[in-house]
Length: 344
Image (tube, rainbow, N blue to C red; front, side):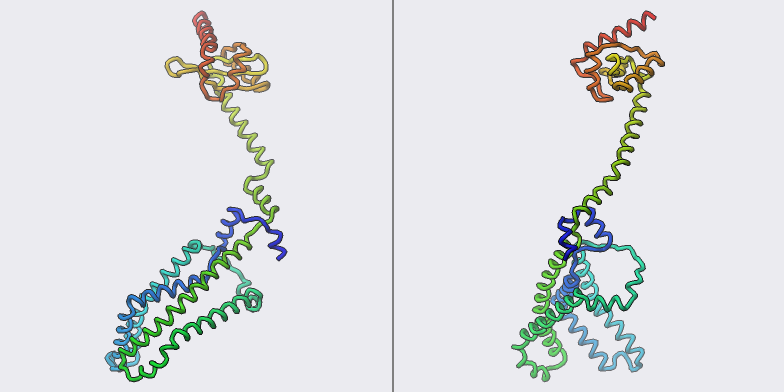
């Protein structure tokens, strides 16, 4: 109980996914079993008469020696016919059990692992006499005791008619017995279905309690998912350095660099006929601004000092075009640069 008292927080999606990968989900085995039985009952309801007639015919052929007198031949023929008779029940049972599994959380493929503890008989004995094993045993005793009484209560009113079955021929006897059996099984089925649904919600409640987390576990999981802060900081630093390197590679292609002159530097590129407006290809402050100016001088890119314009251009995003209110000021600078180029 102390473990659950410490784990007061609901499980995170990652914890739930990890539990699912380990094969741990809220699932009731009783519900799977009762779903399988329900499929058989449905099949009997719609095809029970055919099954009874086929079973009766097979029994008649066995008694009349229609399969021959050789024991091996009789056994082989009867086994094949019996398997064909039972196969639909097995198929329907499997489909309904699979549907119940899917409804309770889907099919979970747990990786196979060699667990030597499972081979230890002492562990099995410990589980059998553990609190959980005792609880499951008591649950089974209650279910089958009450279920058996329910079946007896259903067929009790038909008990006076049972001696008359001895006077019936084989086929009517089989049909009458099948009807009584189906009636008892139907009542028993709904009783166990109710218990199975209750068991499912109980298993779900226990599962939610088992995957609860403490606040410390949530913090540790967050650190693992987000990564080490120092590593993240280093990654961001490298990303900024790579972005700065790519930005500096655009400075030699710039048309003009506008400076503050020392605090800011913004490189603009404009190609007449190809671009609608000048674009910011590089910008920086302080040391980065100084580096932009150095690269511009090395590549003969014009540098123009305009403090107000440089501050306004520095606010623009890298790779964006200048805004309309800056068109006139930038156009004057570009016109000045074009005049200088023509005079050179």
